Amino acid sequence: MATAHKGAISFGLVHIPVSLYRTVREHDISFNQLCKKTKQRVHYKKYCGNCEKELKPEDIVKGYQYEKDKYVVMTNDELEAIKSEKDKTIHILQFCDIDEIDDIYFEKNYYAVPDTGSEKAYELLRYTMEQENKVAIAKTVLGTKETLLALCPRAQGIVIKTLFYADEITAVPKTFARPNIQAKETKIAAQLIKAMSAPYDPNDYSDEYQERLMEAIRQKIEGEAISVPKEQEVGGIADLMDALKQSVALQKKDSSQKRLKH
Amino acid sequence: MSDSLFDKTLEPMLIASEKPAFNDKDFIYELKLDGTRALVYLDQDTQIYNKRRLSLQHKFPELKQLHTYVKHRCILDGELFVYHDHHVDFFASQKRSLLSDTFKIQIASKQIPASFTAFDILYDKDRLVIDEPLMKRKQRLAKLIKKEDQRFSVSRYIEEDGIALFELTTKQSLEGIVAKRKDSLYYPGKRTKDWIKCKNWLEDDYVICGYIEKEKGIISFVIGQYDKRELIYKGHVTMGASLRFFEAHQPQKSQCPFKTVPGGNENAVWLKPTLVCVVAYMEKTAQDSLRQPICRGIRTDKKAEDCIIKK
Image (cartoon, rainbow over the protein chains, first blue to last red):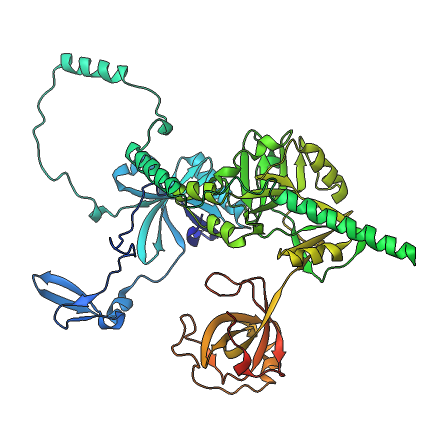
């Protein structure tokens, strides 16, 4: 799997080079748009209705719409001047208990894997956080985005969670009444919950729509016989290796016989 | 298993030297299969790791039963490759390693399935065997195998006659052979001179159109070839010798000789396209770029205009 980010965890005076890997993989089937007639890929062209022509990258600038049909243009130089410094270091800012972070702040997960040579410092940090029951709050620049992180110790290593900033979280958008509940009612509800409780196993669930979609596509591919190989050359590479070995042996026999004749 | 020897932190031993094929009774010779080097951990299941310890088994679902081909728990070293149409297809196995979409992997594993050929054993049943000589390990490997088929096989080897085997691989367009000293031990993660590769290189002549200075005075040539009268960009090749050697040929600076500056060459120093260099490479990709190009040297007996794209 490709590295999502390379940087170093900076913890006091210690510097721990790590690589970040994604913890999830895509399982949704994605389609490409094709021309109905020719089956060629559909391409997008950037077009200006006023100039009536296609635009090249150098013809395009970024504008912010502050009112309908009113834009302020921001040049690349202006944007560059205020960009976060491309600091790939994962700066630890503080430690806290994992329970202090409301899980509404969690966005994505990454596995942090130590680079060769930094395993010791990495394990020291992981083990100590685990013992102290703490997670580290840190900041880094992922891509171009200044990102807030939580470094969490796990048995398999450190898992890094990206966190939403406080201003990204919205409140419940609408109020609703909270009527009083009768003890009798909670008792019945609690019984039902108890009856439906079972250990949670993620393997019990799958996306059934995706499975049907995959099956339909698989059948089509096999139907259109895009060369599912004829259960190929029997023995495969082993046959080739044996054949070559035999040829060498034959050549050797040949040349030693020739030598005997002379 | 929490056996520390089985904690999957081993790395394969690597080849340190390359030489023309040779005959030597202290060596065995086997095919160099052009795929992905892999260590497989076979126990209750199959775990496959590349030489940088990245896990590969989910990319090769057709190989998840490798543990059923051996009699007991072991760690094997070998090559993971795609063999079809009587040819070892490096690009097919590389393409697969880059897939991450589970569904595309499933389809590919049926259409162009990969194989694993084991050539060494690091761990046998209950202990590491890396401190035993190669021939002893080869015996262990042979004894361990229950069955072979298209998915799994053991590497065949011959003794002494490296040159004959190498010549056969040239005819078969295989990558080449590996010579291994019979009494060599296995040092995980190290480069060893006891293992020597003898590769089938291809060669062609290219026009030097400019250069890019990399770190420490190392330069890469920007090379091209003619298609009729137009010079076409053909990529980069690293110069083995120093910049000073190259400057002795007194190249003249000039404008970029291509129609447009190819991407990634904004910092190139452009030269008059007069110098010709010999480039060795493994094979050409479908896009006609070179795999593992090496500059063998500068050639003064050929005109730049005669470096033509061969179709």
